[in-house]
Image 1: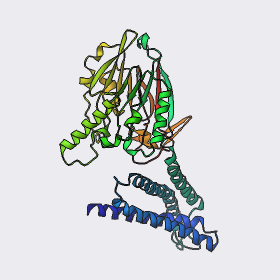
Image 2 (image 1 turned 180 degrees about the vertical axis):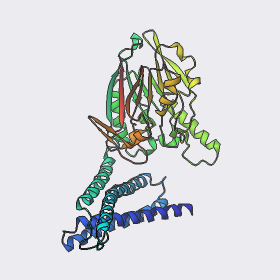
Image 3 (image 1 turned 120 degrees about the horizontal axis):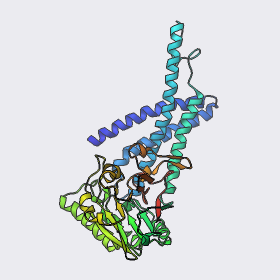
Length: 414
């Protein structure tokens, strides 16, 4: 009953939005022939009504049997709604302009007609109508195009210099992966091509910073053979992300939830990955050592859990001259790491995915996620400490990437 009430409210909002955006459609098509206008109007309402029907049917599409159909359908409907919402912003600006002009005119003329009047009224701006529809259409087209980018892996390379790095470790190559989200994959061959790209780097060390699955350990069943190919001379190490605990899935019993997490741990062990659970290990090379610290998910954001125990993981690591921390959520860096553990040299995180939507071109780096996370993609530095936030290997929710491509990070320590 509650779900239907929510659906009804959403449908009502969408219908109002549809009629509002239709005003722009009428404005930009006013010079067209009657036949062309009819085709435009029927097309607009045909798409809008179909979208409403499909939205109403979403609850009946089994997410387990039809995950790909459901994800694509939801993303398309959401994209269409957002596109219309953006278009409506420009229409609202236009209506505010018309209202102000009408009020000003009313103060000086008793014969002024309303904003929607015919001759002598204040007409809608064709320019703003076109601009609103253009922005909305561009956004929707970008979201559709983004479906093709979800396996378009990008290798990002960087050389990070540290004065206190032991000489034996200078020049070592680290590959960082994060946010695989195996439950979202639908193309095993494409995922395997990404693993091939990692192997071509011949890294000394591979580090995975959490969210191997969306919810269930069994999501890895078809991909164990793919990711078990990841090997490196100094090892493959991992930590848990917020999705790995099964917190977003309904479980019949607490025991079932715990069993799922234990299953996920066994899978990582079977793949040859060393899962770090609030602990640290020593990495040795040429008779010298550095510390690798890995903690469970710890977030400064209230809606995400704090399973991590930094004090436990750090204990004893102070004896090493150089320290790398793997912590899934980048908000941990500002909230605890920098203030309490200033001798942690390099922190590696993921979690944000760069929201899978944004702009990254020379001189411009933007994503809506930056209004929630201060550190959301790439390298950040404070004093002698550095944080790198990986944009994620996989995807969740929206089955695509716009502007923020899936990432394989290659870090060389110098």
